[in-house]
Length: 396
Image 1 (cartoon, helix red, strand yellow):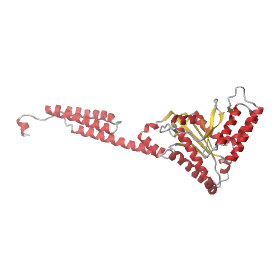
Image 2 (cartoon, rainbow, N blue to C red):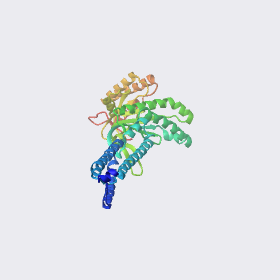
Image 3 (cartoon, rainbow, N blue to C red):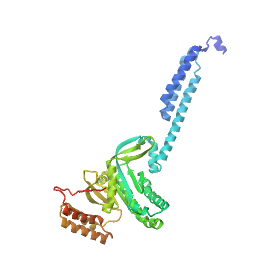
Image 4 (cartoon, rainbow, N blue to C red):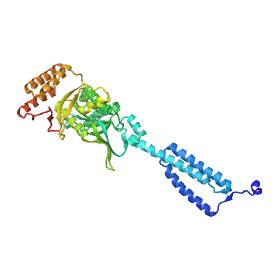
């Protein structure tokens, strides 16, 4: 103090006008700083705060203080620091809420590993749909309406809880699928979103095979416990669809829509017609082949135009039980003769196929019997000239 007096080197206080100017600068600067720092992540926030306080300190010490001016910028340091801390706090709270929302919204539909991946990159869940290639699965209990009418409501609910729980665990936990919804006794699931993958078809078929094998092992227990023997048909298709949060502002869900979704549903419905446990399309097999995975045991079942479509698709039956090669080779030979329109020879071969199935596999080949009936239909209503072997389905 004495040195300052003797050398006439004082810090000069600012005038009242300068005080107002400083306060105005603090207000405007604080708003601008808050707007800039709010969207930043933690590390950029801290770096920008340190740099801003450093620039203010340089201004204070090297320009103002050296010219004997005191603008009392201490409160500016406090202002910048508080804005930075508050921005970090708001960001942290928002992220925690978002994580809780994602865990709550998707924890029951996808595996924990998928949930964690979404938490790390929430942009995967943008509102609205995106076009991507997915594999879609539909599963339905056969004859559900019939036995549900005779079961007590509580028993029926317990049966569905048991059955759907087993199937969902296989889809979600066992094969990283996404559960779309339950439609009564039916299950809708898909692979390839929200986490993209290159082996959607393989995972979908693996799930279907595991589901049918699980049902085989649990059928007797379920029948004993609930008084109902359960069989299920599974249809799978792969193709480009829209996936995302669909619905209204008040009610939306993460789901898929598109022609290939409808086709998957149609394929599931055809399992009853062909007496098959698992049906898929050539689209799924092509996707599996492209991914380098091994295609499960299968046979090309038919070439059909499903209701509502104008192009024929190749239907493929996927086996979840051990197959007999002699039986399958005879079936394929019968189909080749059938597509050549040699009706009598094809009928004989399909009947032999069914007999061989009963002998080697222990059950009838319902598809072979279906072909016998179809050939009888063609006897009175033959296919048109230039027929490519496809059959036009008139029912779903």
